[in-house]
Image (cartoon, rainbow, N blue to C red; front, side, top):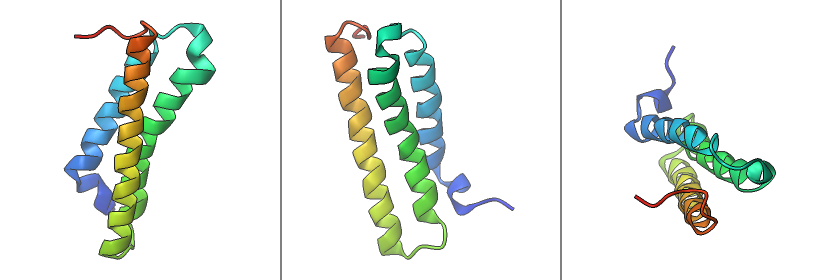
Length: 93
């Protein structure tokens, strides 16, 4: 049996983003392992996790609340990417 969230395009894209962030962080320096690497990966994973949690047996209002959490996590990922650029860990393209 498939869960409702597994059919959502936004959840699928969030999973794709997590895979991309995982690949990106493999090149981060070891001294960032428990700092930026951990933070960006947890924030990124939270995007899809909140979508999944909010979609199951929830009212529309409750689902919207969890989507808001996902957006906040997404903003955290973007901020981490900016930090990575400032620390010269990530190259600007």
